[in-house]
Image 1 (cartoon, rainbow, N blue to C red):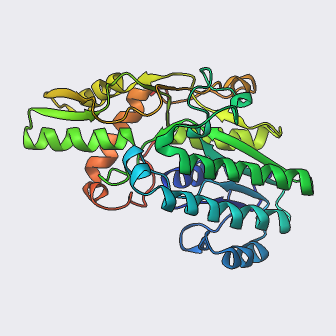
Image 2 (tube, one colour):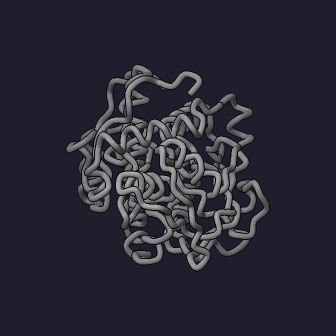
Image 3 (cartoon, rainbow, N blue to C red):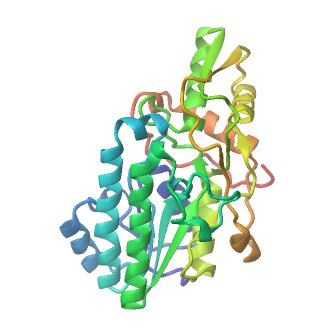
Length: 328
């Protein structure tokens, strides 16, 4: 990639988009278009068409769209699904029509069938039903990937599909309504420590295992895939390490400094029992994560306590914390 290439990070106001924009700038890519207020409403196809006609981005990272944890997926499945579909149906055709050299569409690991062999390999896609608690969102992401592949076959353009592990970090959503498990547990344990609550209730049994990736590592993996991968098959972007919800809760308790009891509410859903990614293709190309889970949780918590409004509003549009990782 030419450092002077025009690059569009669709979703630059999201946690993932901000981290990727910062990573690109740190690597010397100086012609990022559509940042901040310059990004069109990605659900408005006419606005997106006008933006692409004017800005002519050469490389497009499609990271936009709403996402949420189990609770919000159960309460607002239609909202999440339609938002994801509208973004894909606006950005992907415009990128093709206006001559983008390469497009990376980022999906979530929830698109894998619930009962697929672990760790998930891309040949398991479409082989069975997805987890019911996130089915609407997952199907929309699968549709976005299918649309990107359809344009690749129809126009010959380089449309690459990537599937990320569960992301967390500074700028995450810590609200009751929409947070994923890391953001939710950080907020709840911090509040419990502040109020000296004797216990924190955690959804499910604590036994499900998830693969977590720090947001700066995901941004680095997206840029790496854009530069080094052009295959038609989707590529998994993960660390190769899974952690149980119980282990995660304990790690967050240590980071927050909460001394109370962790109580697991088995009346609440667990979601998928295991969700890990086979990222051997990415690793064979030479990519490795730079952050440990503990280092990432510490950075996320430091950001959270410096942005208390993040617990009551959408994730704050601010850059990730300070120094680049080095053995964290």
